[in-house]
Image (tube, rainbow, N blue to C red; front, side):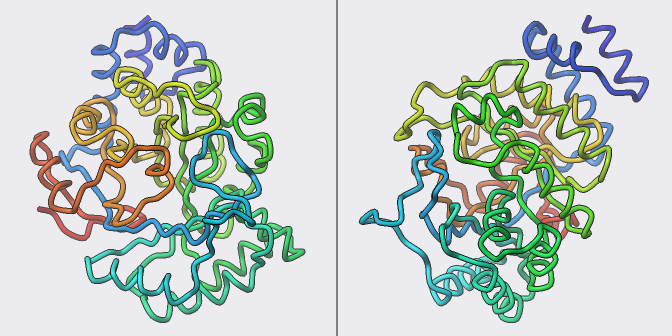
Length: 354
């Protein structure tokens, strides 16, 4: 089977669900990694590994979804519930700019009362104050909540946010794009078709987005493959995804509990993602959840990007995962793996090589 799949890849065609499932469940790790690395080299022959200097500002921890895998959310009446005021957010973004940052990843929960005016005013002021920073923020579930509270269509909501300064949308809240899994781990969150709807509408308006997958909770290998193929099919229709980011569920302090995926499982999922998603240029290796050493290994299993420096990150940290790296650390990590480090923009324009 591995030879059959290798021939398909070398011919420049896409593998099917049956072949992808075999790779995930039956293929040996090193031959699988070799296939994924071959695709990475074809797409990125310059031997470069990219990253962006960014900050993840969680504007609020108040969330109505109450996902079982999340240790960050709070109810509105919780003692430690919060909503950041604009000045606090501006101070955080100023610190990002002082560190040479170019990307603001701003996400909160499914807030019960924040309508579009709150976000429009914030984005307008951020754009005026920090024109060098791309607002890469919200998630499909947040956008749907904003539209609902503001009595807007999806197109109206996204168009207004875009006009106010929202430049691109991260792929948060994808988890697994199979509703039977979503009903188990996040029963109050939007279904997979609504997630796809927001992404396709954003692409139609000219906004680029990323796609993610959180695995290792309650899904089956078949669910992982279905997720990947649904992402691939959206990309076939729109071409709007810049990158795909798989990351493993972090169980500590969560209602769902359980154990994290092993490093071997992570590498297999990453490699299969690179092979299936032949129409997405970039696949990120997650140092945030895997740590620096496994992130280096992941660069030989299909990963070509290390995401952001994340001057601040709270959601994964709330689940007990607290890997931290400065820009210099990422540069050394990439060099140590034998690649050329390069700082990029949100949309993968190269700003500087090191």
